[in-house]
Image (tube, rainbow, N blue to C red; front, side, top):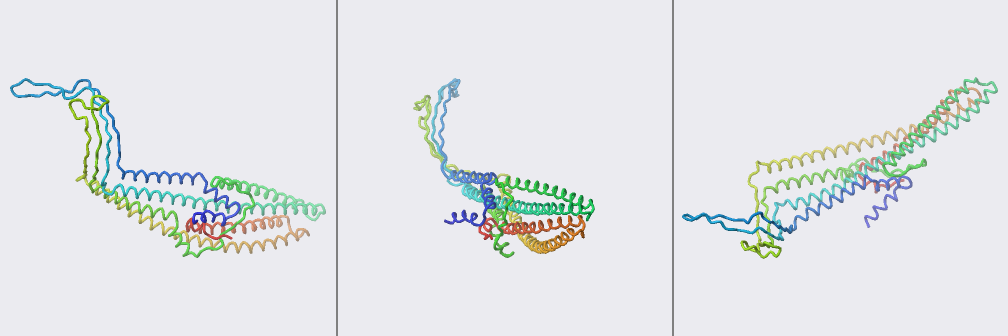
Length: 430
């Protein structure tokens, strides 16, 4: 039931284009590649678990010698005596097994290490998705901002067209000079060029988002942001607890601990039971060759214990301990880095909110100023240059407001994603 809820949540939290983008990322080639790596590592667990079972081999040998094996016996006071001790044809069939009873805990530690590597790989997939989500939402917000800039620029172009008609009318009535008309025309061409530049930039970002998610977005994007954002301390606490990249480093620390145990396992002896059913003969009947037993079946106990290896075991253990210590130091530094990045993200969010408030006030002022200049120009009391600048400034003010809205939208999502994928999936939106 819990898995079903986690599957449905993204659909409930995101709608339209953004939902499709996140689904596209979940099915992207990069994510599928990472999941396949996890499957491969999971198979390796079975490989090491198989070492706990006996290894059974069947061996068949058929040899024909060039000469009959002989042996020469030297007896004092008698001439040497040469006699055959085997046959030219030698055939053997053996069904043998080797069962490791004790490996110095190496096998069990290798199994645990393989399991940790599998968990680590799963975390890497989740962290990859988190990073791709962040990149996709950043592109989404940028596309929204540019789309709004395109909209504002089109409105400016429309306003210039109206002003151009009015300027032509005033010129025909000898109320303004021809230069005023050309001034508006020049500004109009400048705005057209700017509009094409914005469209090209938007197409570029749309293409980049398509590469990341496999989804082509349109121009009518909506900003459905986070409904409720936790306080800074809460986000930091969640990040240190849930962040996938931090969890990966913690798993690496566990793996480093197991590597110490694996190095120590070399200090123990290895014990194995061996046995086999073996038949030998001078033909495929395997009924003996007249010189050795036809049945050479056996059972054995083998013990191997390395006494001295030039201090290699000691150095390997020390190296593993230093590696674990280095991993722990890096983990602590990384956690501090995450904390600092989240704090900085809240500083940026606060700054963006202040800039949005200022941009809204600036927009109000530009709207009033444009109305004033427009009226003055209609009565030939203002120049075409002043009108053109007022139109451009109004378009820029409209674009600025939407740009800061898009940046705040992205920044809030960034903060949630900095807390971890789990927090992001369950975050309420508005």
